[in-house]
Image (cartoon, rainbow, N blue to C red):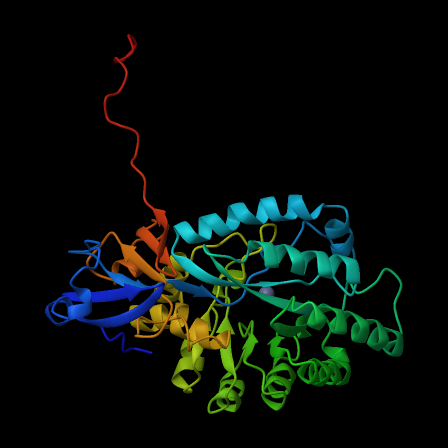
Length: 380
Ligand SMILES: [Zn+2]
């Protein structure tokens, strides 16, 4: 995670939205195929892969315990999309090019399908949206359902989601009720049979069970390991399951997320915002890099790796995004600095000057209002 593979004075050749070549400028410019290329000047700037935010609750409504589905049901799809679109655009401005979004309104088929269809509409040229169906146990239904009734309901919903290709991953919120371990494990194996990739949303309770289940199920990631111990980190090391930390979700507590424990145990780690417009306000991956360096004991290279290629691994899409390599999508961020360590040192500042997604410029920093200020007021 500490090796960024920086090329000083480098160039990237892009064609049809994909990276064709990366290397020292002189070599890339001398390629015959580069001769008629349109040039984008980047002297003195860091050029890096777009950020991958592998865990968000972007579409969460303002809900209290038990009424998550109601808040989705009472909003039109248009309204949900309109609100989410504004957040997605802000994320582009801060350099994200791929974000995962979870459902999680409980097992209300209409609410869940509505959220997944909104995600489908948000997905496009400007942002890769990776949709995940999150099973949340606590707000499942106003009146408790038997496990049998719930299984039948889920079977129908999963079939529907699969048929319409609405989600790529299935996730279970272990945090909401660790007492349903057996049920969660059965659900994960049904999801696998349906062809979904798997994730496990761990939490403060029964983290060890969540990790063990994620490994057994060959989940692509186990998330929210903010309470993981050294022993749990050792269990996770060497497994194919990625660890995802959402350090912003523990900001209100006084215990920093155990990034160092996980990395030192040899666990590949991704960082994600866990952005939720009502409960978790950080949506900038740059802020996460800074937090990781200031509070979690990570160095800048580890933090950048965790927010780019490791995020891509946590979404099973590292073959196509997450780093600047030939054959990958041209998802590229230009920073207004020549030193990527500034990401750790400039907390809250947006260092992104330009974001390119699939070879197209989707964001370019605008001008601040011109300096010809109005006449000085009399009271000055
Ligand atoms: Zn979460």
